[in-house]
Structures are given as C-alpha cells and as structure tokens.
Length: 426
Image (tube, rainbow, N blue to C red; front, side, top):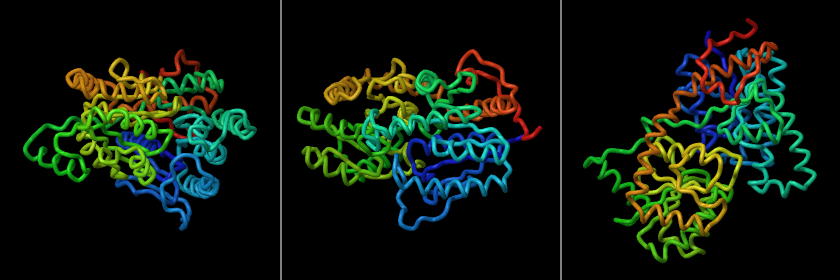
C-alpha cells in the first residue's frame, strides 16, 4: 500500500536553493510512486503546484526566507511543532520524514505520539553549519559542546537516517558513532530533462542574447556562472577575490553570480574590489527558470567553504554540460570524480588559477562538461530517489518493530530492489 508521509521541513519552503530543491525532488519522486506527501513548513515561502503544504502560524514581521542559523528559528520551530502535530493527528501518517536537525527533533516527539517510524534526512552537521555561518565562535566554546551533545541525541532518535553524500555518512559513523545498519545515502539528483545543454536554434540564440543583455553581459564575453545562496560560507567572498585577480589579464570575462540574500552586500564588495563592471548580481532566480540562466555560462563555479554540507548545485552544473571549478572536498569528488577542476580548499589564489585554466583551455573544459553531462544522466537522475527512499522506509519499519537485520554497507539501500510499502500497524 502507498504511504501517507508527514514531511517536516523547518525552513521557508520553497525558496529556490539547496535543501529546498532536495526536499522538492524527493517529495515529487515519492508522489510519482503513488505516495501521499504532506509537507509542514514555516509560514513563508512559495506554494509549489501539486504539493500539499501546511504552514505554521503567520509571523508578520518576518517575511524573508530563512537561510542558515538564526535566533528567529526558536519561535519559528515552536510554531512548526504545533502545525506538524495538528497535521499528523489528522493525517495519521505511516511514516515521518524529517529534514534538518530541527525537523528531526520535532519528529522525535511526534513518532511517539503517532507511533510510526522517523526517517531523518540529514543535510549536514548542525554544529558544523553553525561554525560555518559564524553562529558559534569556536569548538572550544561551552555552547558548542552543549549543541554537539544535542546533535548526537537528535541523530539517535532516527529509525533510519539518510545522508546526501558518503562523506556525510562517514562523519556520522566516525564522529557521532551512528550505527551503519540505520544509515543510508541518497545523493542529490537532478531533472536531467530540464537541466540539459540547450540546442542552438535561431529562437534559442535570440533568447540567449536577450538574457545576456538583461544580465548586463557584454557581447563576446566569456561567462563564469554561480547559482546558489550568497553568503561567505558559500565562498562568494573568495570568488570575488579570485575575480579581482583574473580580470586585469582577462578583461573579456564576466561573472554572473545568481542568488540571494546578500545581493546588496556583494554589490558593494564588487565596487570596493573594482570589478563591478564585470559582475552581475541579478538576485533570486526562480528554480523553474534556472536552467536558462545557467546556459549562459562557459564555466560554472562551486566554491563552498564547508566540508560537511552537500552541494546540490554541482549536479545542476553537470546536467547542463558545464565544466565545474570547485574547492577540493570529499562531497565535490563524490559528484564529479575525475571530471572536476579542483582548487585547494579555501585558497583564493588557486581558485583563480583553476578558473583561468578552465577559461583558457576551452576544448579540455568542454570535454569535461560533456563527460559530466553523461555522468549526470547515468547516475544523478532525480527519479531514482523514489525507489531508494521506499526501500529505506521499509527498513525503518523493520527497525521500529525490532525486526531489522544488520547490513554490510551504509549504502546498501542504494542497490536494493524497491520493497513494498509497509502499512502502519500492519
């Protein structure tokens, strides 16, 4: 029988970036398999057609999307807890699928009330993210230690825990001691039909020219594209500094840096660095249109300054057939393997060197992009998430009932045949 899934998303769903795209793709893949997905989320965000979304109480003084750690989340999560409980009591779900640590904390209470398993969709270490976002000062602080213990306790509540990368699974096993038999990896996927190299036709050429003009890109300039959150932990400061190094000898290069919320901040930084004429910051790009804007690029860049979080922008770049310059992290290598153009982690100088190489050695870079597209088609289609998550739900029910059997690998569910949905209480 199909599942009724209570999905808890402690964020401003939908907001065209990172974890929101993963939530949307997983929910869509499960819907296509015949399951009912009910998403509970914050009061703000876009309503996505075809999804059943229940929002928490309105907070009139806070309309912007919440990105990263914030003290506002204390009362936002309290409001979401009420909405998730109310929705769960009406829905009587067969499974709780919680995203992020706040969602898993709420889900750990609801699983006892609703008497169903909890699946935790882990998208990075809570405390590591707080350090990356400078919400916490250092690992030596007392608050860090308290929150680290809380993170450990939240992780333990899951009957099954899903990561977006093998690197995250390794972190959970080695740093948190999470048992391998309850640990699974479902990598970020992409709609390879929407995100694909676009065939050049007269109509397409006209659309491309109009978009370039709207973005302020001069004719004939080579374009480096970025699409994601604009924040220091995403490496935007490093990217701007690398651009400053490149542009004196590569004046025909333009940086199209798309996303939000830091548009004004990075506009000022571009002015201070003297590169404003070579940088476009159009702000938020709707997910439904993002492939058209990525197609303007010659090279894509993913300079994320985190070694624990996923990087869902990389599959988008790969599906578009773009060569990808990125800092050398385990997460980036999981996606790209030998097809990435890697800079030393955190090095502005090396980021500039690798961007120069990708732009100058066009044939080599385009070949990497073509091979990346082939890998995305072969390994990263978002449709594969549905059967993988179904198998994880079945194992979560086995563990919940005390029937689970040890598995030889944290990634075994990736290769399992889909199992039949388990009815609650059956």
